[in-house]
Length: 237
Image (tube, rainbow, N blue to C red):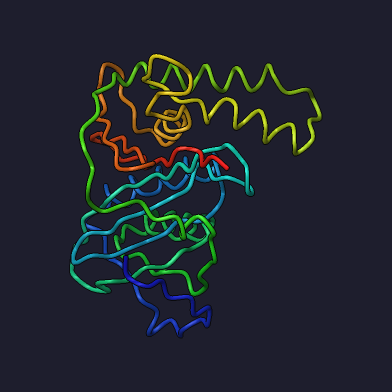
């Protein structure tokens, strides 16, 4: 992937870079996506530009330290730009800043996204999914993925006391979202349950729909019409 600029110096409004989305429908779509992402994990949005395509990455799950059994679960949506520019741009911004600008764009009827003047450091951007080498594994019903996510949320709620400690929360999250699905036993599956959580929470699942599953090494990708989830299985020590 191209290098990520980390200059946090605010440029003047006259020179501040902007991305022009294809239309106002894309603006509303990106705003819904960013809103869902912020309710799950407020850890920033990575914006990458390749030609006239904008890739918007978010992180739903990430390990909190060595030995944490929570998988990495990243969401990805792509948007067509109305004009070329900023090819190769790659930076992370606070979701609050992105949402503030998207709301202003919707109210004024402009598809031009003025990029926030301050970028962020996000540890999850150092975890890079592979670009190639993906092999098809299965196609799974969206209703099944949604059931996995909802049952996991319910299981966590029942497992944790009213005021759990950080260690207890980490263990419970790892037990639920690190669980592997799609195998004969609990340890020989392919798909971490956390991938289902990300697809459900980001609005990628449709009633009666289906999602393709691909794998590459420790990574699994869910691909559907609404977006992608890229999930790395928990790393064993």
